[in-house]
Image (tube, rainbow, N blue to C red; front, side):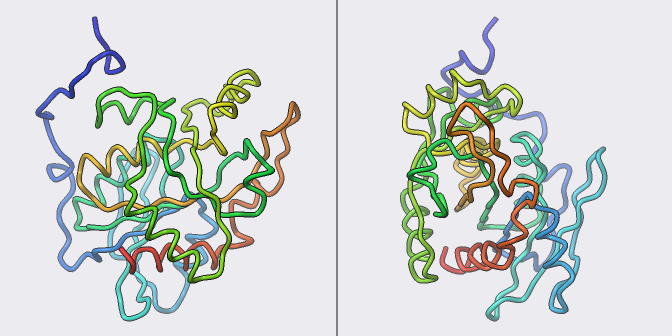
Length: 254
């Protein structure tokens, strides 16, 4: 028996597609932004120029999708669920609604504090230490970010005056199984950070041919034998405006 990790080619076709479960919405914004911080989403959804335009449905509950008018452009935004499978499903359904460009941002664990410091992280590739990406692309140790998306993100960050670092991220399914030997191994392979969605999102965006940008910001610290929580518990709220506006600017630049 071969699992998706051993197969060299994708199995096609799928029994059903996102458009079979999600209806296309008239005038849905072409640009969509998402993050994992409920605090950030709540902050921006309460603004006067924001309105709810749709909902994502799961057994966990309903996830609102909002529209904001930014620089004469309508941009959709919503809260992504943490973890590759749930994050990808939300992306698939938003694309089925009508989104054509997608920007995602969120926190990550820092593996190399000397290089990351206070910089925003641009993933140039992701180690596929999860399962979801293998349903969208054939097996490989890593998946590379589209160079054009990296260029756009670099340009936006430079124009906004924010420092950044480019590097490899480690996408893992098991937050409580980030063992010390594996952390050391990933650091030696050049991984700057660890998170739970990037490899899968790069894979699904490539499969669906959707322009995709993701940036990360450091939260907890895994650069030593002792875990440091730092500002992980704040879920990005201290820089909410900074991150969200960066995402909007990336969407406009795509």
